[in-house]
Length: 313
Image 1 (spheres, rainbow, N blue to C red):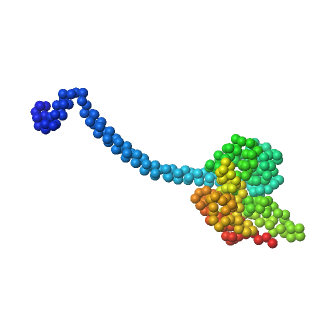
Image 2 (image 1 turned 180 degrees about the vertical axis):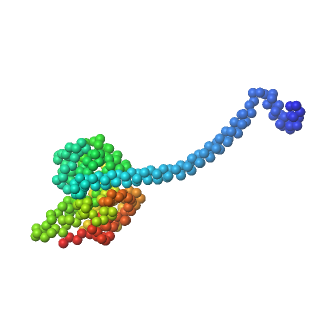
Image 3 (image 1 turned 90 degrees about the vertical axis):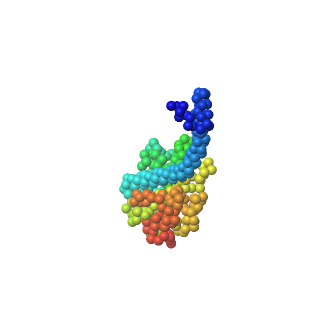
């Protein structure tokens, strides 16, 4: 039967069959392997192309997801800071924490007072708000140092203790709107109630000093993403303890936001595209475009115009 079937094959085909039968050592898989190797090389090129396409699609998506997570983390941290700020005021019968004022106590993470002879001056460290608010984070300043900025705090913690106290108070990720909220002795705050003449001092109460004084807590900024011109290891630090409003007595902001010039917009940092994270007096936290922050109604509770300013006599 087998011979009968083979008789119908072409001579060429018979030759192959005869050689295969007569030479058991010959393996047709060698022919298949040759074909398989050619196919694998082609497919490898296809796979490489597909991987490149997927990488081009996934890497930007991963970067976007990472950025969104970092933004959410900063929003969460700003919310914690605002909650601590409110808790402080409640403990002080409604009195807001001053942004900068000498003569107030501040404490180390273990609860001991910051020594006067500390690096940079203990009185100066205590005058700034961060270490006075620190007890409301259980002494853990990490809530004030978000994202990559947290590495700076970690480096401080591994170095000189006095330097850590000083620089941690100076460069948090969020700055306080201390000119208009809480008061700032370096920004015309804490003036006497009366002038030498006995007349009321016009600048004695231009800022909010108590929770109950807010008329527009939903719009007044308390903490804002900040930056500074100071550098460490050649890199500009993404944080500062004080932010300046667009207007005070005169304009304090440049015509345009310059990402390389911290003072161009009062030490505000637009970390997220054109937005900075802002925590308002009512506890709300959101990203606000830098141009929207030029509106003085977002800074001073009594402001009724975009370019509101103080007009002392």
